[in-house]
Length: 127
Image (cartoon, rainbow, N blue to C red; front, side, top):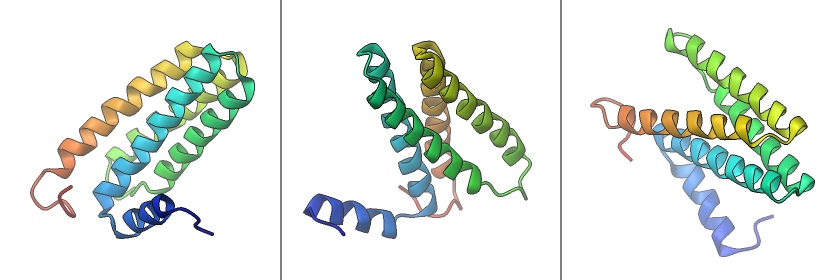
């Protein structure tokens, strides 16, 4: 059940967004959760760390499930996503900011690449 106007707004945004916009929204969420997980590690807050790094993993799994293997790049992305999930697990188990920071860097770079790709002519909807 949606309680706040902001939650309603978020739901409408998600339901009406173009595919490129949805992809960027997933990256934004993963980046936000990894950053929060890093904060949890730095604060030695185990619950915050675990919750946020697990949420980031869930988003990356969603990115994996959205891959279209008709395109060769999908195999490369699958390898990168798998690596990031494994690094997030390492970060969570060992409380390692190094592993989480590496994932954050990869997510940020991939997000920027997708933003540029979405600007190309013929890509499903400009942002």
